[in-house]
Image 1 (cartoon, rainbow, N blue to C red):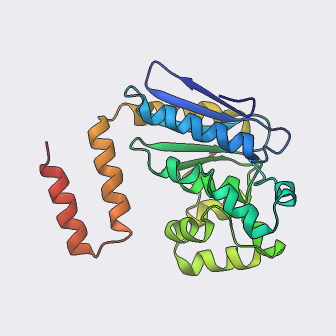
Image 2 (image 1 turned 90 degrees about the vertical axis):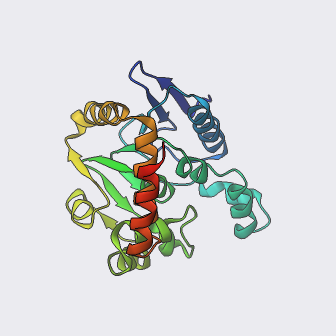
Amino acid sequence: MTDRVSLSFSDEGVASVAISNPPLNIYDLEMRDGLIESIAAVRDNPDVRCLLLRAEGSNFSAGADLTEFGSASSIFEGRRIRWDRDPWLPLLGLSVPTIAALKGYTVGSGLEMAMLCDLRIAATDVVMGLPETKLGMLPAAGGTQSLTRLVGPDAACPVVLTGRNLDIEEALELGIVTEATGPAELDRTAERRAAQLALLDPDIAMKLRRCIAASKDLPLPLGLQFERRLALMD
């Protein structure tokens, strides 16, 4: 991949994508390009049954490299250029289950990418937040949408508007994190969960994820019809 992103495959069908840009794992163009390439490789590998997104070092990611905006004519043009090299939608579009292993600073684009995964396992030292509001910006990677879908508008609103940080207790209470573990056990815990998900039949896993996603948009009667239709498909 690149110096910023590595990709490995296990015999159990788990693809592990690790980001590395110490000390804060800031997202820059090289990292985004590496993520796009890695996610495409996962998408195109028929043996992959689960994606594990993790990070080297003590932090998952402190978000985007804001210095990149300095090379654009405006902050809006800078964001347009970044959106043209977007790993978020390719991640969301994967057919296999996805897990993010979070630790330390997990803010801005780092948190936004994690919220596009199916499960988020976090170390007890995690610090989460969407600080863009305090910088006079909107979240750049869909945070207003992904957070609201996870926790509902009433819970998401104060987090987005204030840009404040959340600790592991509040992240668990809100439902942003699905499981907490000690920092030393994070990788092993995430790998075990990924291996468990990889045991699912790929077709069943895809249908389950489609049903859950549809529940966020469809009225209950239509959602039940959609589930029934997928259940009857070969």
